[in-house]
Amino acid sequence: MIEAGSIKVPENRVAVIIGKNGSVRNQIEQMGDVKIFIDSENNTVTVYQKKDPLKALLAFNVVQAIARGFNPEKAMILFEENMQFMVISIKEFTNGNTKRATELKGRIIGREGRTRDIIETLTGTYISVMGNTVSIIGDYISIQYSREAINMLLQGRKHKTVYSYLEKNAGELKFRKMEESF
Image 1 (cartoon, rainbow, N blue to C red):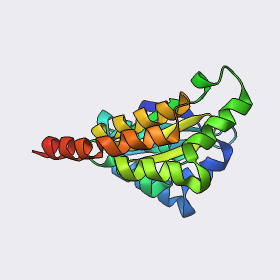
Image 2 (cartoon, one colour):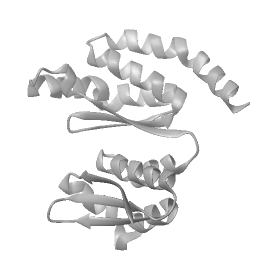
Image 3 (cartoon, rainbow, N blue to C red):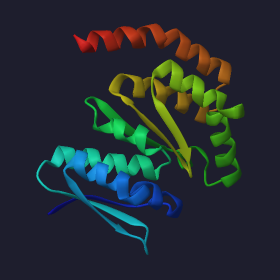
């Protein structure tokens, strides 16, 4: 078997990747036509492709998404056509200042999750903030708008400015998605 990828997973996410009685792991293996090996001592998950390298890459992305905080149901969306996974490092915006990283995560999540919900709703993406990363699941077009909104927040733009950007571009986003489907 050929290794499709290996990732160190936060300890509390290993059990989520396995799932109850191995259900999540089995589903990823079946949908991705892969074999998954989990080293519990090192919290490392390795995905091996059986035949199709593209399916194996999708399976690896699903494992990464779960490791970055997405629930398995949302992560499985990555097996659908045109869906993508993106990770943005918050560290690039902090100069090593952990207090600043916490502030930036708070800006993205917003009070009671409001900012994240607005970005998800207006772009049709899913967002997870975990550790020093922000991860996004969505189609190619939606993910670009979501990434731009998150980058604006990380650069210190006002929430109102970000919301205006998203509202202004919501119509264009829908139009581009319709155009792409033809």
